[in-house]
Image (cartoon, rainbow, N blue to C red; front, side, top):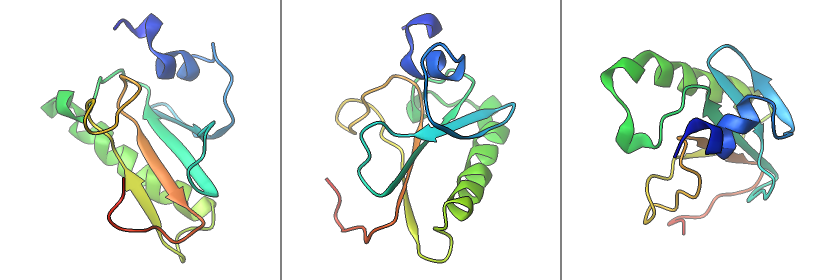
Length: 116
């Protein structure tokens, strides 16, 4: 898939509207259009990486930034004292439906286990 065909690359580029909750030079975060919880934010690196299975050593700092950003967004959404879940789906059997690595931040309700 080329970046011009990637849904999340198009959202990052502003070609497709989204309800952004955070953006910096490395990531964009926006509300999921089909939320699975009262708070459901997707955090997407601006660099196109197909999935967690495609991460390279050069992506180490980027992924560290993503994790710090997720923590800050959780706090900004009032979840830091309540708890929340982070999900990264990888590949078809892992439930990944968009071929661009992304992180789901879910909160605002009790999360059950096991998921799915």
